Image (cartoon, rainbow over all chains, first blue to last red; front, side, top):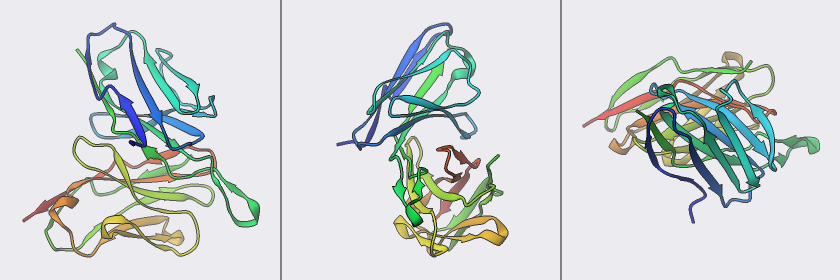
Length: 122
Length: 112
């Protein structure tokens, strides 16, 4: 009954290969995210999907392509892997927000993170 | 653009002592503030969050944080640290655009 799950947990591969990381959430959330955590533990958002629609696309090489087949899944495909892609990739999900004061919707709900995928490119 | 600064890269504290982790944010509107904890080799777990209302928020594991708008701060505190609190702590700020910006993190070491 894991809330946000990622596969694989570890991924070791050669430079130039293409690989995919999968993420699934069973929380019924509308929005999903991909973050990259570098060797200095700095976390930076890469992409976000809301109801299968791309809403955040930060400055990320186009070798990275997210795909959301449905609301509960957000996969990350990486082409032509480079040494600098070595990092921990975290998937997260959040609800579409609750209605706050005066009926204002608050979209920035709590984000729930997966356990991470540790990618090592050799 | 929103940003978060965690001034302390590494803090060492004795078990049973109090802990305070600093967080300063920059955001143009009312911020949504979070503290997450990451244990070695693990994902991020939410400790607490501030959206509105009472500026002193209680979280899990005995943590609390205080939002001070005048100082643009959201410092995390725990009165008595346990060895299991050794971890990486991240402060984050978000708004209405779904983006969550994290600080660089503070590593907490607990000595016996």
